[in-house]
Structure formats: C-alpha cells, structure tokens
Image 1 (spheres, helix red, strand yellow):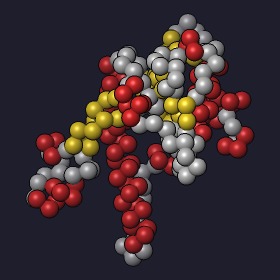
Image 2 (cartoon, rainbow, N blue to C red; image 1 turned 90 degrees about the vertical axis):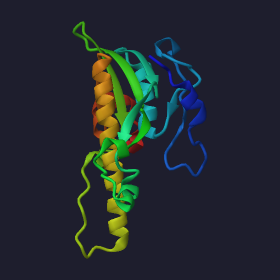
Image 3 (tube, rainbow, N blue to C red; image 1 turned 180 degrees about the vertical axis):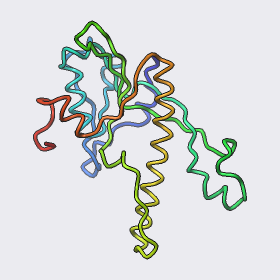
Image 4 (cartoon, rainbow, N blue to C red; image 1 turned 60 degrees about the horizontal axis):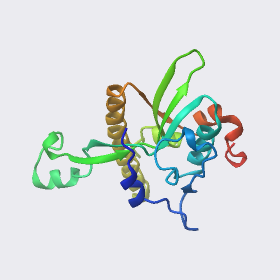
Length: 196
C-alpha cells in the first residue's frame, strides 16, 4: 500500500483558530499498529480525532493508517458550464476531468470470529449522504445557490466513492462511509461528550 506522504506534507491540517473544524496531528499511543509515518497521523475533524483514538486503542483494530492512498476519479461536474458554453456533451467521458481522492482511513480489523477484514473509511456528516432536494422555482437566490453547491458536492462525492469502492474491491477490501451515527455506535467511550 502506498502511504501518500507527499500529499500529507502538502495538505497539512489547518490548526489555526479560524479553522472550520478541529484539525491536527494525532499522537499515537500504540505506534506498532500504525502503517506509515507516525508523525503524519492527520485528523481533519473532531469525529476523525475520535476515530483515530478508537483505532489506536481498540484491540480489534490490528493495523491502520490515515489518508493512506490517492486514487483517480472522473469529475463530471467541474467542466459542466464550459461544456454548455462550447456545445460539448457533458456526458462524454472525454469532457470529464480526472481528479484525485484521498480516503480518510484504512483499517485492518479482527472481527472476532477468526476473520480479518480490511476497510477503507471515509468520515462524513450524515447530511452529506442525502441527495439535495431542489428548491421551488420562486426560492430566493441564496437558497438556489446553496442547492447548487450541495448538489455539486453530492455528485462529486458520489464519483469519488464509486471509484474508491471499485479500487477497494480490487484490493480485497471494503469501502464504507461512516457518519456521526456510525461513530457513536462503533466507538462508544472514545466518542467526545460534546458530540453526543
């Protein structure tokens, strides 16, 4: 497995007071379980920090890594306006942009029945998994813009996750998107009290 270290050096966590989410470098307590550079264990939200703690301390997690790989995916959305202006078919893959997706985590878990499962994990708010509902025709411009942004993000995530799912299958692994609800059920005592 490639360990995506150049990306981590380039895309450092935003630890400024103005950051939208809690970000930083997780300090390992069990470094023997971590694959990759132990000084580059990145979390980009309080949920991801909780997940790092769970991976670090849970006896069922045998090995793990943060932002371990970078895979290509086709972004159909970025050039949509350009395709319309130039009369190009936005459904033709030749007009799509190849971009790269960095999944949040890879974990190897002992399921307790002798089976070892390898998983790629993305952590997202549950609201990001719901298809946006278009506003009515008379909606304020602000609401229409919000829908457009949400729809774009939804479609891009859909493309990223489809590519990651295909890549995981080829790698004899599974791909899951964990939400705050998944994390609360899964990691219990490692879940911060202010997120319950």
